[in-house]
Amino acid sequence: MCLLHKDLDWVKFVKDEVTDRDEYLLALESCDTCFLEYMQQLEKVLEEPSPDFTDPVMQEIQGMQAKAAKPNSFSPFKPFLHYIVAACLTLFLLEVGAFDWLLKDSLLLTTEPNLFGQFLNQLGELIGTLKINLGG
Ligand SMILES: [Zn+2]
Image 1: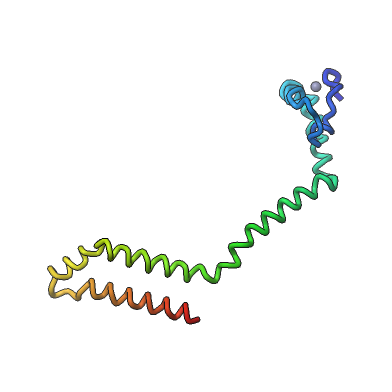
Image 2: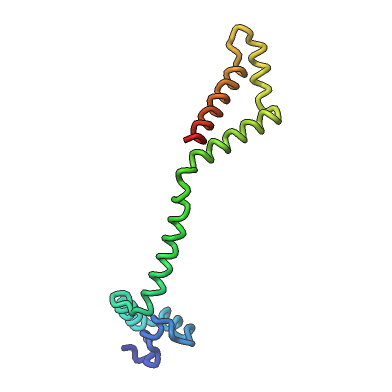
């Protein structure tokens, strides 16, 4: 018990039932005895949590778990969504001419297999995989 701050009730402070928090914080900063007392009361509350302290915390945790669990229910669709995004992105890049350099290179290197044709074949395979996933 601190003689300098004997009017401060650390149990109330721990339970957040005080109106003059600044006075308590000032005592914590300046007084080792008060700090020790505060830590002791905090330990007690954490060791034996009252129902009105644990219930809101448990509800909060359960709410967070429910939120976290929600996206998992859509996980079977995730690979499918990745395919959609990849296909759309590829088609968009084709549209804006991002692969024009492939076409040019394949025309210059006439002995090499047509890279653009290979690319189109791979795109066709990707769309085929997409159809299989849609069917399954
Ligand atoms: Zn004190």
